[in-house]
Length: 409
Image (cartoon, rainbow, N blue to C red; front, side):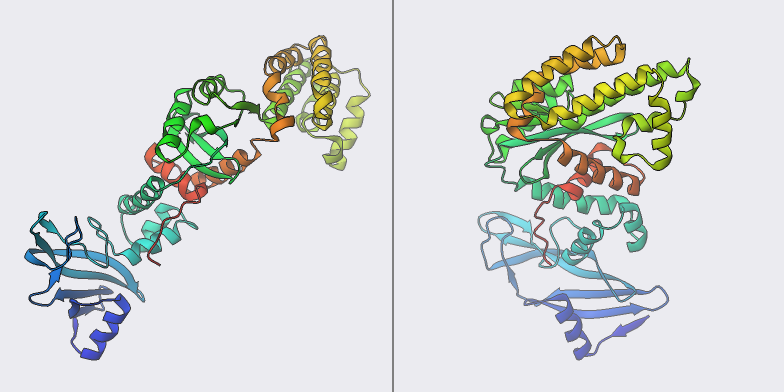
């Protein structure tokens, strides 16, 4: 154990810590074997403090209690600050624990350490961070949740008029979280557990609580989830729904693939051909083009289904004036194709035609949401999953919320 008592060394550390009156360094202990640095702080006798509740200055210390905070490492040495934390005696508010200039109330970490954590989380998982910092991951999560919750409380959602909603899974196959996105700023502004219609009710209330108004929302982009459709109608009554064009194409692609799977039972030539029917011709590899040309010469049901799909893609190139007539013709053709999966797809699209046609007015797609979901899934993979939805939602905002954390550095 080594004790640092030199005034110049104390002054150097005080400057590094940003200390000011009435605080000063009393002692510094350095343990090379444990690679640990302990810095002991104290205030001058007779010092006064501000009341942590009303801000009144000149409050004397009623008593003190010892406290310790983890600080940023000095080089490779784990560093801790020690101090007598005073309780102020305010004539108006009574006896309360004073706030320390280097740490927030109730935290076992300094502001600078917490800021470092908020920077690291952009590049690494909490588990990796806990190993790097030699801190338990639950303590790291407390820091992250504090700053995310604080930033969310201060969100100003006034003026939000176009939103997108989507679901993302916390674990494979279950435990869903619904996210709400401001489609004009491309950032997550809301997240909640579940994927039912009531999640949009919570979104409505969240907007209200943060200066927004669901009545001002004029556009909602979503997939064709019955729950989201019902939720949008119930809680965003002045909004028009745009069904995501990528989701529409997914329905048609799945129908084409279903035709292929059924036909494959009697025609082995269709085995290992799934992707050539899902791609456009210009995106095929040379090997796939040869396979496609060979199969397309045969009188295949799959080839007919593919042709119906390709014709639907032309729908997106129509003018707003011609789109409805084109969609009706396509639905009639697909519904009379005698291909059951294509008939089912046509009926689904016809049922939701109003929301599909709305794209020509709003121009909204869930491409923004799909991009955000990809970022979220990458963070989930990096973290190897999340133990609870609370942490998952925290990570969603850290990944795609673009929040202002007002960090001290």
